[in-house]
Every structure is written in structure tokens, then in C-alpha cells.
Image (cartoon, rainbow, N blue to C red; front, side, top):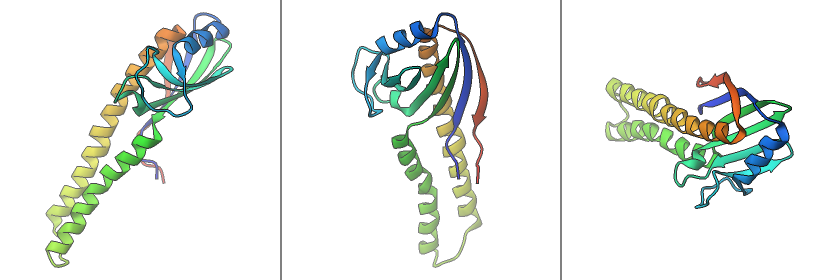
Length: 167
């Protein structure tokens, strides 16, 4: 089951692929671990030839979104997803409504309360579709703007936004 949002973009850069990747390399601190650290660079991550896997270097919220992309000639593809560490943390938070349901079952001697089930569903929906989705959209937009500035992106268009459950 896929419960975390993900977005795909196609973009076109104004200059050459080599110049764009060189600018990105200058503004990216090399790091195999996608964690935030204080740095004067805009991003942290790995850039190999014409592909990259980076995060924003902002402390706290920068590591939330992982940007994976490839630049071919003047066209490129970008995938934005939630960092694995944050997926684990958010999965734990998403389990809290189930803990509430179990606690209610234990305290009510095994009787189901319709109100508790409704509250659990509403809490789950709130966490997933308001908290996680809005945070992802806001932080991914910030990262896209930074990347657009560095790569000198002329045009960017969303090709897919996955915010549904997939079994």
C-alpha cells in the first residue's frame, strides 16, 4: 500500500546540460546520506554524470523531500518523494489512531464504539491528507524553486501527482 505522496515533473533548461549540471555540482555538497547539515550550499546529495539525488540543505525541513532527476540535452525529468527516514516517522504517527482504537477496546471490555471508529478514521484522514500532503506540497515547492534557479529551468510541468492509495 502506497500512502505517501510523490510527484513527477518534466522540465526544460535554457542553457546546455553540462553547464546546468556544473552549476548544480557547485551548489551541492556531496553526501551519500541524505541528512541535513549546516552548509553554505543549497543542496546535499549525489550527482553523477547527468543524474542527481539531492535534498535541500535547510536544517529540519530540508531533508523531508528527496529530488531525483536526470537531464538529457535540454530536457529533464524530476521525481520528488518523501525521504525514507521521514516515511518511517510518519508511518509511526499514522499508527497512533489504531493504538487509540485498541486502547478503547481494552477499556470498554471488547465493545466497539461507533464514535471511536469514526474518530480513528477522521484522525487518519487528517494526518494523511492534511498534515502529510500539505507539508509535502509546501516543501517540494520550495525545493523545486531552488532547483529551478540553479539549473536555470525555462519550463516545468507536472506529469504525475500520486496522492492516492495503491494496493
